[in-house]
Length: 418
Image (spheres, rainbow, N blue to C red):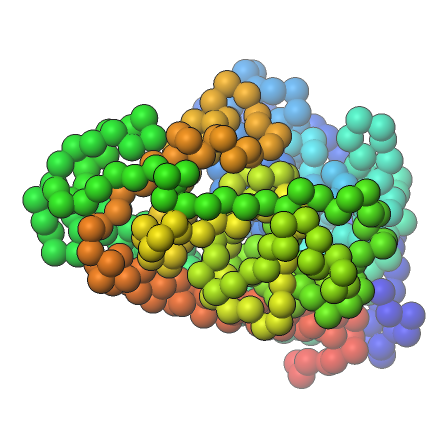
């Protein structure tokens, strides 16, 4: 929070009873049913699911927080950013979990409170005040110590809320557009792999233990018979501090994968002598990468190599044998339900901690005989990916803009005309 208080603004704490009331548990009697919302029901500031339909008599003990007019609510758990404003719909339909804390004010717009509670910096402060052993959360006493600054004039509060909510609407529209493109891509993938590119005659085959429809003139192949899979053995006992961020060579790890590609700006560096150790794996355009540790089966396609790069030991590099398939086509396979089914089969009955080369004995995929058809399918899906990446880029710009505006508008650093 800013140390200076702009003219016409008030700096205080959420425990200041002249302006705020921290709401306690307990709900009013209601007839019929209501929707119970747990913290799992919320994604940032949106309701994404209903935990349970409840009656007043038959409800979980945690369904005990009453949304009321002029209030805003936030999840109390550490490292959890979930916020709701008590609009008419929430008040009428819902009961909240005791995992939420409610802030009531008749002098501060509930929309302003919501934006304040959504601030990333505020949540760092909240997290620093959490307590507990099994599940860290902020209690009412520590919530009361959180500082807040706001304009005394309700019109200025309203103007700030309007600006931030307008940006929120643009963010939501962009997210919806991304979801639309992703849905269209899934349909395109399904159609390409089942009908080919010219609505060919089809046949039913088993791929990864599931019956699938594919074009009659396509083949089903096994990854290990058509590909080489290489992985780095390790760093021969070197500690992280000894090899990271030194030298001129990229070290690519699974944490550098973003939506099927590599975020080169996120990669760290290794020295030349480290780079040429263990099997001398040097990445090249056309490589498909698959994580074998951590998040199993996360994938990335190498479409460019800005400077020499290698892998860490948690990643496989996959390359076709003797031109068995087009590498971009294989990327489409790895982004599809065929690979998802393969990973799910491995996880069946237990959570796998590591993906081994021998596991790929069970991974099959359909492939057109014609390389031209492989390339055409890859180009269709790449075009779809490019649309998604473009919208993701725009979304990131909007999110950065929102973050910057929150810091300016919610502190009075930038004033709005009333």
